[in-house]
Length: 344
Ligand code: DNO
Image (cartoon, rainbow, N blue to C red):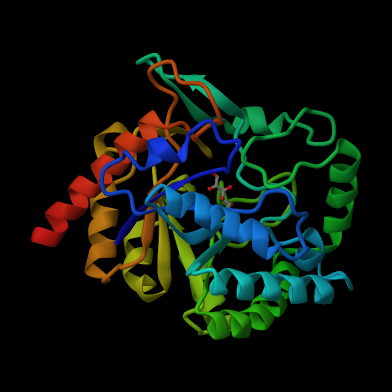
């Protein structure tokens, strides 16, 4: 297992010099942020991230994310050119030593929260999702730009996309996923790169848009579409765990051979389809973090893991979910559990 840390590039308030001081940190998880979805990433940009990491004693073996353009998810004619570009980016990443590419297949919105800074009883703040609040939102009129998005749309674009997606139900989205992954897998196999799909966050439909990577059945269907181990999974505890019906330990055991990347984070269920993000330890939230890590360990997990979102603590400000302090505490908790599991 390799412990990693997400880094948003030179503009990230958390520097590589700080990240390297977290004990046992092996590398960063990052991306090229200034190329539109569907275009090829320049070698120079990929190599600049690698050099910055290596100069700080860190590896760059995991990319999060190479975004999948909406045209691919909607099955529009432009998808063939965009998939060719996607494959070329994969080949370039493979050449630069990248082993895992995390991506998602969520229509329009990536991860979504109703609150980016809910104050918790201890004075820290965290991301939260309140179903009642979300039901009241109108994505075409509210200001919905979130810091985690790989790209943010204008309200007019969102309106257009929501209209276009009316023709796409879950089965159609699966069909478009199959078209995409079947064409990308050969490029991955040739380049030694694994595609690791991130679950939908939260794992239920949003604003009438279908979401298909929501739990155990999704992984069975995904695997049946293309059995290659390059068609793999990012096990995100918090995304899957937002739905109390998801048994993450079983997913970890059943699909262990295709989990190459794990996002470890805890959530606390606060009501129907509602949750807030909690500190990493099991007792701070609703997820059995030890149990999930043990299931991964039992399944022979040998991939990359990162502490996922942290709270903002000790007066830190910055990118919601991606401060330094709480994620560093999370890394230490995870490493402690893993050492105990390794030693039996
Ligand atoms: C949020 C992240 C997601 C994730 C993408 C992967 O913090 O977990 O934005 O990076 O969904 O494609």
